Picture 1 (cartoon, rainbow, N blue to C red):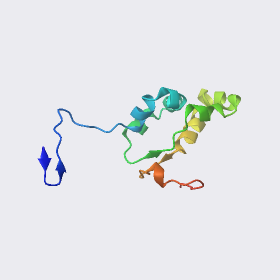
Picture 2 (picture 1 turned 90 degrees about the horizontal axis):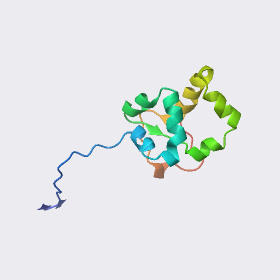
Picture 3 (picture 1 turned 90 degrees about the vertical axis):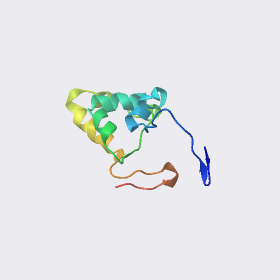
Picture 4 (picture 1 turned 135 degrees about the vertical axis):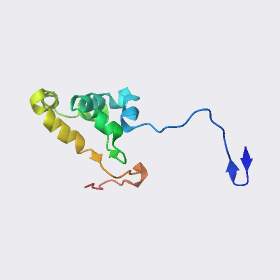
Length: 109
């Protein structure tokens, strides 16, 4: 429908933006290891429902740069708390940051 200030398109469905977990799980090549670790740390539901967050999401290749022994250790029950802390350090609460506004060398608190 043409209007005086644009166009209205009729839809037979409601558009619901995906959660950060939906985005990550829909791209297993890029985020497969992250999804595995988030699930292991028990954070999937929290990240799925927490509003207004920015996730600095390491791709699978980034995890490959870690020492293999370190990563294996983080995946064991005694170290899951540490894994959770590491993963949560990649989450910025109460802030949705556009990637274009992040500059090399920026820090986040």
